[in-house]
Length: 362
Image (cartoon, rainbow, N blue to C red):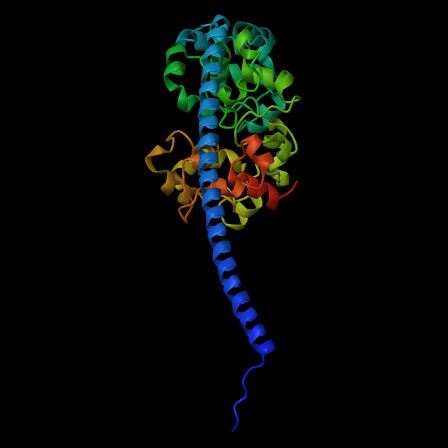
């Protein structure tokens, strides 16, 4: 068989193909090096971003603490120390038997002043285990306060008493009276969902006036859309904290992008019969239950280790700066997820919250 020699044209084309293949290999290698370099640059930029956001979170925490110290210094002048000893309690019960004039004297002696707004008669009647009679405020001052019956949706007497047992024992005051006279000025929270420190940081005028933050919230802060707790976003919830605690949670309102009541009910974490966010804040430190599908409390707590604030639930710790101090399961920093979301970066939004907001738009 006669072999055919390739034509000059075929040789030229073959050489061109070989050259193109070699050039393609070179371009592929250059592309791979460029991609690796870009990935490395992105990783380093993500680490720098996480460091910057962590530093900002730390600076904000220090500013909050400084503002809170200034508030307490200003509020000291508003303290109204008082004592309610055994003899006075006995006198109150005697006055109560005298009818309306006696109950009027009890109310006058309590001198709640502008703090009377924290007594909601309808709420108190619903919270009381038995009928309270024609004068619910006097009933609270004489019996209900000692029985830890709630006088207002934003004042949790059981929560307050557990954290201020020594002060209540020393003064004999009801939890509400103690809060109004002493507790607020000393920085003592009235409810698991009302953080005085978090609130004061949004209302800097309180560092000068020393006004009771809870009264300020009811007077003007709620209407301004201020948040009483890091886990309560009024815009996301669709109303203020009073609305949420009295109506909103029963309607399935979500108080924060990372707290999903429907998901928690489906997961068996809540029964739908009690307000879920308060229970989460009080128990999640021990149970490590998750608030929703975009934040795993147990995984976060394990990654955070001993650095996690023992006074906070995992989600509150995460939002307070812990987000910038932990690595993801692949050893990469979660801040990488924010690289293409400049608005989230500017606002200081955490990666989990940014993901939740994108996935659960309101």
